[in-house]
View 1 (cartoon, rainbow, N blue to C red):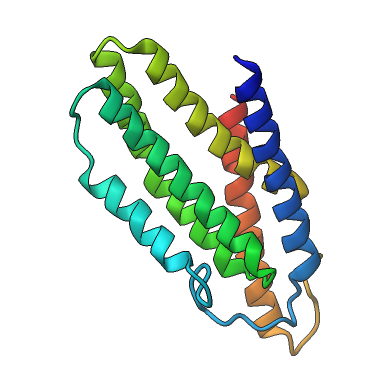
View 2 (tube, rainbow, N blue to C red):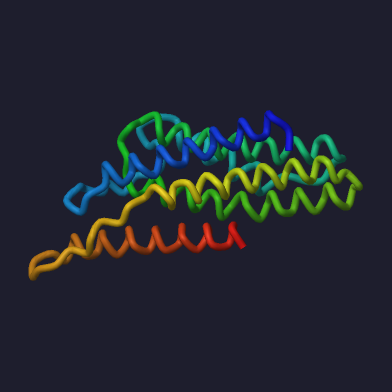
Length: 183
């Protein structure tokens, strides 16, 4: 792995750590959930649409063009991450959107990797694998820094319990991804 890749991965991990800590600091069961998408008050929807478009329409056109597809997916994903961080209005919906986008991009990066292997471009395939691993590491870092608040108790806390259950489900999903990545 080159020095540039180590530098990129450390930045991605730091972003994930910071994002996880910020979400933990900002989330509470009393906060309102506006139900809006990632970056609803800025340009986030544009980045999400670009990512979806790339993932749905890419084709194998040769080694360089195919590798460029993976780079574009990766860039669009981290544009979404940057968009989520730029607003400083952390909402659980943004994390859910990022997770959904990962579920979109991960299989496509795997397909690009396989295509490059079939085109006998193992070095480019390895770089695509590193991009995918970098995104996994981002979520592993979020998982390590996302603290689940204690389960609320009492009689009149149905909304708080519902939010806690959603947070727990997200934390469990992130932990599952971390376990998969580490195995």
